[in-house]
Image (cartoon, rainbow, N blue to C red):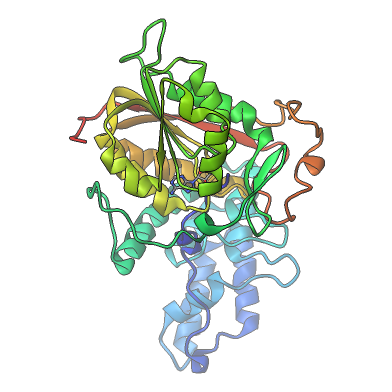
Amino acid sequence: MAAAAAAATNAGGGGGGGDPTLHVPSALLRQASFWASSGAADKLTRLVDTWRASSSSNKASHFWSAFVTHAERTTERTPLHLAASAGHADVVRLLVEKGAAWTALDSKGLCAAQLAEENGHDEIVTYLLDAAVRSELVLGAAMRAMRGYDNDDAEGEATTRDAPYLSHKLTFTETSILDEAGDAVMMAWEEPLMNLGAQIACSSSSNSTETTCGSILNIGFGMGLVDTAIQSFHPTLHTIIEAHPDVYKRMLDAGWGNKPNVQIVFGRWQDELPKLGKFDGIYFDTYSEDYEDMRELHAALPHHMNPEGVYSYFNGLAPNNEFFAAVYREVCKLELGSLGFEVFFQPVSVQASPPDETSKSTWAELWSEVPSGRRYWHDGHVFYAPVCTFKGEPQDS
Ligand SMILES: C[S@@+](CC[C@H](N)C(=O)[O-])C[C@H]1O[C@@H](n2cnc3c(N)ncnc32)[C@H](O)[C@@H]1O
């Protein structure tokens, strides 16, 4: 399933509203846009100086906040789009410093970094990626502080946020699980990705032998695809945490409770994980949770990994925009790195694994059960499978 990225992706942007008496004339904004698209950073700053000198206000910040959010009417491109697309690194830097939003999308749904990439301006892509990761880290921390929670080192302190999905009546079809709104909780086409996830989670070098991959935890049973694959690696103990009563019932009906090496834990991982010990491999794929939940899990992982243990997750963060997804890969890499994990992402072409396991053959047919706009994967997207090996100091569980 697709985990929503944190709301912090609204980062940047100076607002553009403010005091109406400090109106910035649109002719001036158009002129400034022209300088941005022609790469004239010096002319741009001189324009602001001239405006400051001639206006009743001395506030350059007001100009910048109006300018960085000023979008062209038809293309909806901001000055950052224009400068990035044309390859003007100086102007891009200036605009970001003045509060331009790297998240702004044009009428085609593209952000500035994607336009830079399309036009081969790699230096700008790297700069924007770096700036975006920094802003996500800073804004994420600020938002957590504002909301009054930060579980960085607070194993056992489960969040109390509501989980309305858990009271939804689920619909199980041959190829999907749907929630009450018709959104896909899980879809059968993901089987190749689940097989890869199991392979990664079962790849620790520490306690695996020729006959077993050690002790494995999976969080979120769904259709049982990843768990079926985990079983093929013969774990000594295979623990599954599942929170939804309908899914739990189906697991029991399908006989998962009778498997000698399987331990089913019914409940939310936020409540149940602190009661469990250490594992050689952990896979995480829940539903209706966001990056903050995932971050909370990550903070708890050092309490539950054996040395050289391997962690992986369904990497569906920001699936509708490839640059945003790249930002979240970097954010996860940095955050997991700070917790003692060595992280890399294995790219897999989802298109190259046609969903031939199901009776439906095209992506359009596959997604026919889910309203458009709520489809969390798109034809041709590359899936980046996380491989996170624990190299840090194990902590008490
Ligand atoms: C996308 S499905 C998992 C699919 C699974 N990887 C597979 O191979 O079929 C997500 C599952 O996580 C469960 N879930 C959601 N929130 C949870 C939570 N907080 N704790 C445990 N399970 C949760 C859902 O009920 C659902 O069964």
